[in-house]
Amino acid sequence: MKIELKSLSGRHPAASASAPAALQALDLAVAAGEQVAVIGPSGAGKTTLLHLLACALRPAAGGLALDGVDPWRLASRERQRLRGRLFLAPQVPPLPPRQRVVTAVLAGRLPRIGLWHAVRSLFYPTGIAQADAALARFDLADKLFARVDRLSGGERQRVGLARALLSQARLVLVDEPLSALDPTRASQALATLTGWARDSGATLVATLHDVPLALEHFPRIVGLREGRLMFDLPPVQVTPALLAGLYAHETAPDEAVFDEAPATPRPVVMHCR
Amino acid sequence: MSAVLPRQPARRDPAWARRVFWLLAAGAVLWPMLVLAEFKPWLLLAPESLEPTLRFLAGFVPPRLDGEFLALVARETWRTVAIATAGLTLALLLALPLTLLAVRSLSISGLTGRMAALPAALRLAVRALLVVLRSVPELVWALVFVRVVGLGATAGVLAIALTYAGMLGKVYAEILESGEAHPTETLLRNGAGRLQAFFYGSLPQNAGELTSYTVYRWECAIRSSAVLGFVGAGGLGQQMDSSMKMFNGGEVSTMLLVFVLLVAATDRLSAWLRRTLA
Image (cartoon, rainbow over all chains, first blue to last red):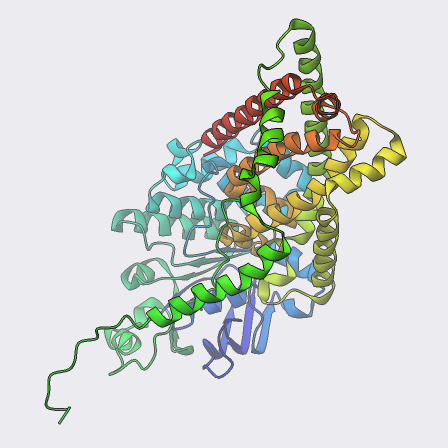
C-alpha cells in the first residue's frame, strides 16, 4: 500500500489543545512494498505517526493518503473496511489473558472472515495450520494451545507479531516490536517480519528503539524528534553524528512527554452488586 | 522571634475537625429519616408484641417432614427452579443485544475520540430502556401478567424476564466497560467488526465475571420467584403463602429450609464455575 503524508500533524485526542502536536507538519512518501524503520527518542511522535497511518487517529492538520485515498473522506463503513487492510501491532500485545494462543493469532484474520465463521472458529479453530505456521516462524509452535497468561512477556510480543502474519494486510504498522525480546530473538523476529513483508508485498512501517537492528534490517530509516522529521536516509548514510543529534538530551526537559497521553481513569470495578 | 525558634511540631491532626463535622452531618441527615421510617426498635421487645411473635415462631417447630408433604415441596421446588431458570434465560436473551448496543467500548466511531451523534443517541436510548425495565419491580410486572395470562408460572417467568433483563443489561455493560479495553480496541482498529471484537476481545476477558454475576442473578431469581408466588405466580412461594394463611408454621419452616439449601447450592455452583473459568 502506498502512503503519502503532506504536512501531516497529529495530536492525541486527550492532549490539551495548547500543547504542541505530537507530530508536526510531516511530509513523507512510502511506495507500496517498501520497508521503513522509524527511530527517535521517546516522545518523538513515533506512536502518533503509526496511529495516524492506521486511521486510529484523525489528523489534526495536513493530508494523509493511503493508495491515493484520504481515509477520512470515506464513509465510516468504507473506512472500517480499509482498516481491515491495515494492521497495527501496538507496543503492548493486545491479548486477553484467558484466551488461547491459537485464538489470539487467528484473530488477525477477523476482518477477512464473516461473523459466523468467527464464532464457529471459537468452537473449533478453523485455521490451526495457518496459526501453527505463523507461530513456527517466531519459534512458538509449541505454544499453539497454551493460554496467553501462561506466556512470558517476550512470547506474548511474538504472538502479537504472529497475528500480523494472519492478517494479509497491505500495510503493516508495528510499534516497538522488540522491547521484551532478547537480542537473538529480536534479530530473528525482525528478519521474519521483514522477510514476510517482502514475500507478501506488504508495506512495513516499524518504530524501533534498537538502532543497530534497524540499520541492519531496513533499507530506509526515518528519524523523528519532537514531532519533526530529522532525516530520511538509507542506513549507510545514517552517520553516528546524525544519531547523536537525534538522541541528544536537551539540557532540561521542561515537561515529560508520553508516547500516548494517559487514558482517563476507568471506573472502579464493583465486585458486590 | 518565631523565625529563630525551632518549628513547633504539629500536635493536632488537621483532619480531625472535618471528620467530626461529617460524623455530625451524617447524624443530622439520618435522624429525620429514621423518624420518617418510624424506626422504633424498642417495640420489638415490648411484652405485648413479643408474645405473639414468639407464638408465631414457635409454630415453625417442628418442620413438617412427612412423605406426602415432602413430595409436594419437591414438586413445587422444581417448579420454582424452573420459573427462575426460564425467566433468567429469557432475560439473558433480551439483555445480550441491549448490552451490545449499550457498551461504549464496542463503538467504532468512538475509536478516534467521541462517538458519533447517532450511535451515542442510540446508546442513551438503550440505557433508558434498561432503566425502565429494572425500575418497575418484578412484583408489579407479575401483577400485570397475572391479569394477562392468569394465575400460574407463566406470569412469574415473564415478570422475572423483564426486570432481570434490565439488571443484567446494565451490569453486563458495566463489566464490559470496566475491563481492559486494549484487546477489543486493537481488534476494532484493525478492521474487525463489533461482534467479532466482542467475541475475540471482550468476552474472553470478562467471561468469568459475567458468569458469576449471571449465577448470582439466578439465585436472586429463585428467591424472587418465592415472593412472586405470593401474588399467584406459582411455585414454592404460592405454597408458602397458603401455608402461611393456614397458620401452618411447620410447613413454612420446611420450605424455608429448602430455600436455604437452594441458595447454598447456587453459591457452590458459582464458586465452581468461577474456578473453572479462571
